[in-house]
Image (cartoon, rainbow, N blue to C red; front, top):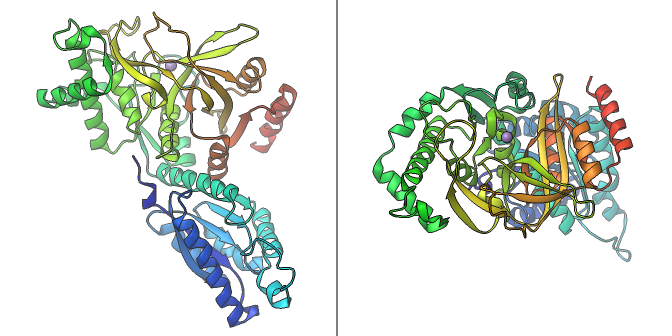
Length: 496
Ligand code: MN
């Protein structure tokens, strides 16, 4: 699991020399109290570093340049305790390359009715100081997050938590590497796209390796390593009898473990944090990786089936955001529908590769035929996904731009037993309804593959879209088809 505490955001307060030494000393002191409180807050997962108050265009430019190059600095939080004339910020903001959160707060929560005098008014001016700062950022067309409220309020801490997690994800994206074993599934449109534009937009690189390169690593895995991993399988999952010691399919489990260890070694050696493969290109492999891909996802790697590198990258990115949170994130596919008019639902699944971090109860380890790909029966983990609110997130390439699509869904408890379904499964109800949710998704061009998240909210994806300057289409309880069609129509012009 990623240690978010190894990343930092800087707390930068703006002011000016007009107020004199004593006021500036208090500005510094109050800023330090807020920054330290954030740094010690269990709600905020990264380090928050206090920076001395900036008062001139040169100081502002300097701190922005430092934030750009400081190792592990993922963003800055700004606040104007007093009035900081915003022309002073133009140079700094022009140079700034890390995400910015504008915290519109004030040191005191309440107006001290009996004590308030002009000294107090002189010091506590963020109500208008932050407006001056906000104006210049709007005039400069800069994307940022504005958070409003007292700095100790739970809602403010939660918004900062969200933004810092997304900032770490954006930072990681800049150096992230995705490896593809083979190309996309033949003739499929949505899993394809412009990898060069993606690297320019998101920072992650997508490159291919022949599946034979992976096979070579798989074939070098020792029996001792395989034995150790099989022990781990036995300790962690309910193995079907034939996969157990002395069982008729034990050799399939042995092969699956070898594939998992090969994948792990290949990804670690290459510094890859996400990968894709396809059942159409498995030369030299005896099984399509099932349990191996499922467990690599559980360990934090991104995965996309059938060469889907965009979804694979997003699986990893969303796992980074959700680091240490309860619940899971998985590669997912809208598979089949339940059109019962009073209880309509989507059955989400994949041939094999659903991440066990979304499982409720114990996970079973089974082997079954696959039906496609023409290889030996793959070993896979079979389980039900937990009930509760969730998201489906899709990243698509529209030719002139990328679009992120989010559908908020409500997962329901899987109470049916599915005695013949040999895959992990989830059941959910799309917002605002089955009919409108699916209609909106299809009009928005959303893929059949998604990242399914139990622990992230739409606000995470909204922050990410803002940082990357990517179009975002949200389908939630307020979505209407008429409104959505207009939004898509207007966006065609906004992104022309
Ligand atoms: Mn698929």
